[in-house]
Amino acid sequence: MNRSQPIDTLPAAPTSAHNAAPLALGLGCRSGVTLAQVEAAVHAALGDWPLARVKTVATLDAKAAEPALLAFCAAHALPLQAFARERLRATGVQSAPSSAAHARFGVEGVCEPCARLAAEGGPLVRGKLALDGVTVALAACAQAALPDTAADTPAAMKTTTQAAKQD
Image (cartoon, rainbow, N blue to C red; front, side, top):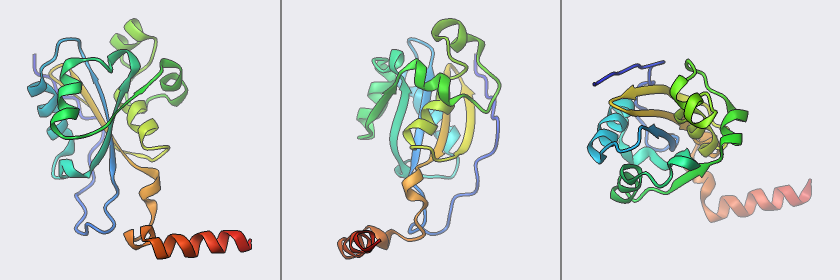
């Protein structure tokens, strides 16, 4: 069965690569999904945003050994973060709670809280999309809130460190 349930819409892809926030991808899935199912769901959730914007993938620790999730991360050279149920429960979901996730793992959802946790508190930019046994959500990484990537240069870091020492 092929179901798609977009909860909210993805903002338009930014025109400037300099202020494009990196994304954290939260993934949940049924046991035994294929790499093709994961790829299709991720690309549907990304819309016009390139996969290159994704800097990390996150899931529930009980799903971290799922072959299709591992294959997706390996194919795209992305790290996979796994979060404990307690952390997901503390984070909560914005979409309707998942009865399947609650029955199996005791959490209201997987993809949204995992995306937010991996983004270190960054906001969801794409709520849960469920497609063919895979759920996907995207969050903007919190540290990417800087207006310009020039702040990450060694000279800028030295200036920031010196200013912090003076305070």
